[in-house]
Image (cartoon, rainbow, N blue to C red):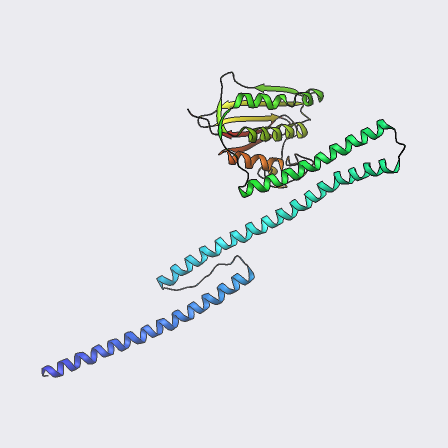
Length: 317
């Protein structure tokens, strides 16, 4: 065979190889198009039904496998977002329902007192004065609930500034416990105060701390009254300044302990009903602690000890 014949034979062979490769490429493209169409249809059904299904496709195509892995990761993220949104919506509806109920109760009482005074012009001055005092107290309850609701909204939106500075923790703890002295002695509580002589400083906000301790001490009085003992201790750990507010009351059931800081969590055995059932006291406490770079932890054994521990960053010179 001369040189031209050899070249011709090689060209024919190359053409056949190219034709086979083009045919295979065409077949692969058709197969990939069908697979992509299947992925599209399945993905559309998953998104329409808002189901938790994943995309499954048996393929040897490495690029398609990577695509499926990424799509399934996005689907998992979407499911988490949907679940969080659903939980937030339920929590918001429950919160609005509870707040509506909690506002309605004292307002109904106020209207009843006012109506009684209006219908009885000859009511003795002493009785009228007592009713006015009750109206004033109930009106303050309403204002406090509204204030908590808006404060929590501001905290969660980041619109409530909590500037931090050096705070003398010994004095803050003494002052806040002293504020409850009359209530505690009047109800027969034994008070156990453990505050070291050595000054302890934390990087915190004094107003926020006052509110946190007011919430926790109020809670201990209201829900730990069975034990008739309430305590507050201040201590230092390696990287934390800790305040423990504790009591020996009925405690908090284990199934509720992970949820007592949720907004409006108001099951009968929970302690998140700190202010006339508003369910915001402990939530605000947790948010304020977090705003200061700290946290709040809970330990509870019924009728032995229930402790709320506020941990803050120590102030370093």
